[in-house]
Amino acid sequence: MNRKAKAVWHGTGRAGSGHLSSDSGVLADTPYSFKTRFENEKGTNPEELVAAAHAGCFTMALAFALQAAGFTPTELSTEAAVTLEQEGEAFRIGRSALTLRAKIPNIEEAAFVRIAGEAEKNCPVSKVLNATITLDAKLIV
Image (cartoon, rainbow, N blue to C red; front, side):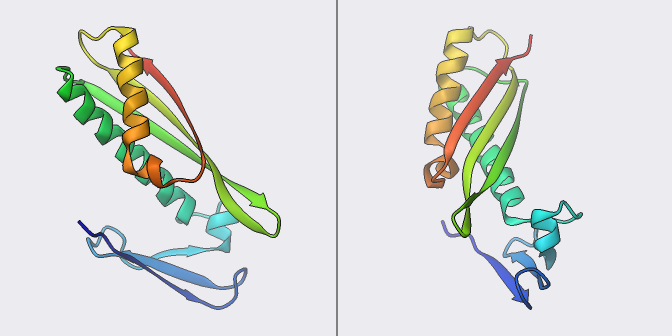
């Protein structure tokens, strides 16, 4: 399996702007800029896309792990908060904090925590991130 996305940038880092596109069309000339990345202007940025990828990947990995263990979740809701940190003159994604809220009938807390932790470690996006990853997993009754 191979997935592709493309970035096109015009101008300088601070004053320039660009757009992102993906082969699926989900991103189609989606604008991004210094202001969407560092000043919270409306629009996307690479860190937001990494956060979405991490949340989606982990949640799907957890759904498969729960299924393999004989559980069917009613709802899995995950937020990923990605932190961009300055490292010398450059920046790096230093942290991705996953917050999971799950409704899973008939599961014990210990099994839930174990399965969620394994899903976090086995999620392909977790494996590719060179960052500290935390998981706050709570069952909702």
